[in-house]
Length: 538
Image (tube, rainbow, N blue to C red; front, side, top):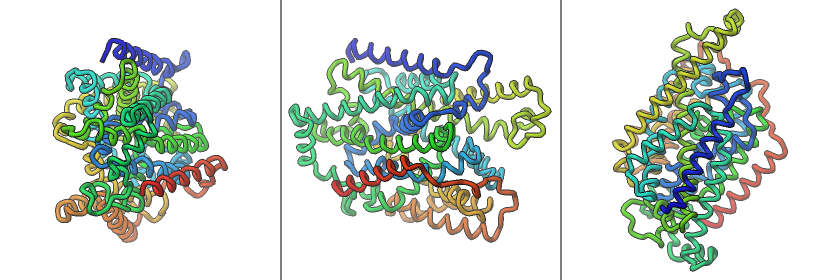
């Protein structure tokens, strides 16, 4: 990187850090409480929700990892992005009305109010492990690959530097600092990504982007097939029609509908209308992501054939950029890494603090405990402020500890992986069918019991392990669907045999699923675009 490139990146780091601290300031005389820190004062506008959803999702694991899969597999990997756009419409229309009506702030909290405390604790511990050892490690590991290849610095230094900046970036302001700066991060990501796509295609087409795209589709036609044939060498990764009518729906519903660090943005909305506009905005951005992420990876097949690892594709394409432009695109990449890592860190702190620490030390939080309105009324304002300060402090400490653990575990866990994005999908797929089962039953079937939910969650893991061991030829995406269906049946049978004994505190009778004409029109637009894309690239 030249001096100009370095200067651009340094200016970006200073500016985004300063902006995060600026937007997270509190009014004079108001100390930041747990609602401010974990849910951005429940006052996020639609544009912040939509941008933050994308910023939390699109990180190194998407940019570097999915671009690497584009290099190895082709455009078919874009189904993860395009099907996510359709999933967001389902989340906005049917899931968010229930969550916001019941003032849910964490997914484990929903499980306790619907089923009971045992499943809340089990799933809180599970999510903490998944977020720290799979998601956060992958974000900073793949980010460090890109930073090291572009700048030439030691990868371990890049890894710890990214982790430290993401931690400090959100440590003071919490979700508000993350969400309100994500519009800048996403804008830079989109512009930088479009720039690298345009330049790589222009290089292939000798100055013409259109000619470059035409030449690329002609040179590697197999990389532009959305639905892979069973004879394709990567059919196990993307098994044909299952990407549009099978197991991918299970993973998408679990990720976009019931994943704390994603759904937390929508839970912090001003109201349901703002939340729904936010998810539609995010859905349109998802349609654009393959152009930004997957296309450069496919272009690398022609511009940089013979890479040692597919995950080197995007960083290699970045090195083709001219001086100044490289700094801008590199800043966009680091923006995505930092935004996603900061989001994950904040959600880890949220779950640990609200779902574990507060629940297991109720004697310290009599004024702000869940369902403790009578006790809270007798607590002095000073005591209540003390409790809020303690929660925020615990959230910050847990964020620091989680970041240190993730940074230390990144190399041992992911150092030998060739396609980290696909590794992440397969690993998390052991759990996602069960997560989808328990939440769908909890939201839409009143006879579902805690015993049934636990059966679905534990059964999903056991079945996934058994299928992986004794039916290794089954593509993991098809395994998701089979395990989901079997776990769903088991959960329903156990629920009927062992009915719910605790009260169901999730109210759905007065929930309205009607959406505004704007949401309906924009949602229809998403469906039309998806049908057109799959018709063209089938």
